[in-house]
Structures are given as C-alpha cells and as structure tokens.
Amino acid sequence: MSTPKSTSHAGDISATAKAPATLGRDAIFLKDWVIDCNIGVYAEEKGVTQKVRLTVDAYLAPQVRAARDDMDTVPSYTDIIDAVNDITSTGHINLIETFAEAIAERVLKDPRIDAMRIRIEKLERGPVRGVEVYRTRPGGAA
Image 1 (spheres, rainbow, N blue to C red):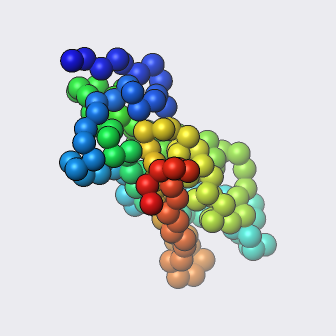
Image 2 (tube, rainbow, N blue to C red; image 1 turned 90 degrees about the horizontal axis):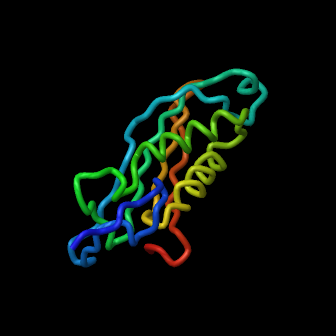
Image 3 (cartoon, helix red, strand yellow; image 1 turned 135 degrees about the vertical axis):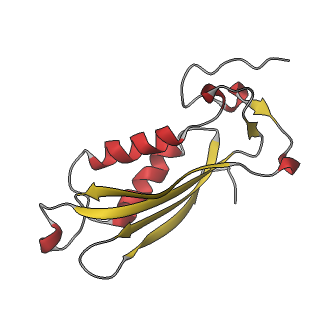
C-alpha cells in the first residue's frame, strides 16, 4: 500500500506512514547549535550579538513514521533551523523566553509535530544561563 507524497514540508499527517502508538515516539532534534543572536533586555546587550546555544527536540505525533526513504514523509530538522533563522533575522529579541515561544509556535504549525522541548542558553556576559520550555499542540501530547 503506498502513501501519497506530501507536497510541502508542513504536510498533514495523512502524507506519512501510519504506525500504532505502541511502537513508541519519534523525535527530530538539534543539539548544542551555537549561533550569534541579537538578544537581551539589558542596555549592554542592545546593539551587539552574543552567542546562544539551542537544543530543540520536536516530538512527532505518535502515528507518524517515515513511509519510505523520502524526506517528504516526515518533518525535517531543517524546518527548525529555518524557523530559528527567520526569527533571529527580524531584529533584536529582548527575552530568550519569547524566542523559545516563537520557535515553538512556528514549528508546532506542522501537524506531524505535537510537542517540543526547547532549551536556549546564553553563553556570554556571565555564567551560562537560559530557559527550557516544553510546549504541546492543542490536543497533542501531554
């Protein structure tokens, strides 16, 4: 039985192979990605970039599996990279919390992803510090 090919990266769940939830849960991730980011609420952080480290886990809906050896059947970590790049290209971000929320909001638009864990760490101007959020799609994973 063949599954129809998705026509976009944010295709619907019907474009992927179906699998029973008992098989477990898959995730795509980025780990320890260090980028230069114009971020921070304090005066000394305005107008300069600083290094931040991102780790993102995007949990697929339980029934989503790769239908074939084709990247259109599952979400791609490239979609997460694109979301981060788009968000950071819009200008200064005051809070890493709102940065994390923006990433979650954008990536969770893909119905094949129903939960995300996002960790953002500021690496400069003092000890490493940051935020970790876990967000789910309404009606998604708990």
